[in-house]
Length: 517
Image (cartoon, rainbow, N blue to C red; front, side, top):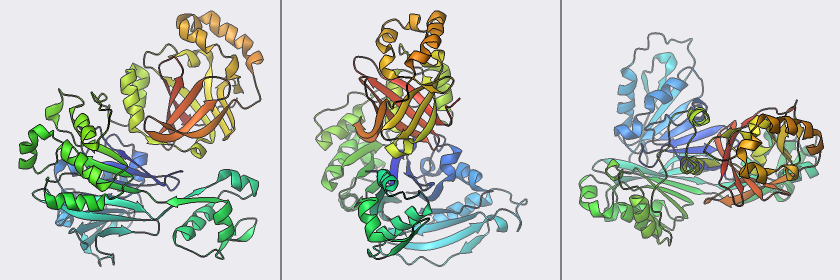
């Protein structure tokens, strides 16, 4: 079932702490902490509506300037919530700049800053670009104890942990997960449009079955009928973020309550248990302590992060200790290689290539994509890893893929926009003799045979498949032992992994755009 919110670490496990919460279908995101934000694209940062900061150590707030720089001349407001003293700290940061070019004609960007004391918001202020970011005190929101944000679709809860200073932990909870059956829309001849979000909001708000929903071209329809035929409803997920906390009984109790039955628990694992004295001196958890807390909370998926650089020469040690504490039978022996940061990693991968191990690590770091998000046309390019097929598809004129529906897919669209039949493609020969397959004569022969290989029939289907620990969209070929697995890079780009029996994984990326002639 499609998740409304899809979380992922901003950086590698030994980088600055932070989790990016991507809201599918709503052009929105949130951040838990904002250290190094360079792995996030401007498009991703412009979607951020709220930032929740654990505390103001540099590795948790170093990305503030980049975020504000991107938002300065855009009207979308931004809200930041941190511990007591956070308003003063943000104000001091804003005062470090000269704002003489801002006046009442400037873009009306507004920054709201709130302080949470572990129980409730105790101070709120607003900084407006049109007023050169002079502080305005705001009335406090009327929220329940322990709640930092409350909306119709979700709440964000928080507790204060002891890190020598207060360090906030956060939990985002969806009220209900409401997905659309695209096939039902087609069967009922209902259009896609804003009315779907209105109906979702009504369902999450507990509206009765006789609540009318205005559907263009159909007039008012009863919510009860739509609920049973068009929407798939399930419990909302719970995403918890815990960092920089001493291993004390009080902290353990607070974390366990906050993370109870969490779907995703991101918890710091900076030190090994052998270095617990160092962890105690710096008020951090060990990987073993994090695993014990996760077990006690009943969290379904656990991700450790905030690894100390002291273990750089012992790859996998922290993951192994966390896995052992979680009771996993299989303990990882080493970590994946450090991921290159920055928004241009795809371009650099195309230019210089990466190892298969690094490619898998990148694939695992990306958010899942749902089958219905793949609909449309996608231009494709290979990503080199030393695979026998590297460069072959482009050499033969591959343009990309076309998804007309779950069961109507053209997986191989070649110049000048024609779909070829995958069952006729000599993949085995290409894997065995890649140099021959990439030769000029082979390209000439392939162009001649293009008319024979052409097909108008669908050749694959889309499904959500559990792969490498995460359910995501996959394209399953009808007559080849091949599955293409997908992960989202950003709104317009997808990373693909071709899984074929007896061959190493082949990587490619897709960009939203026409493949037709």
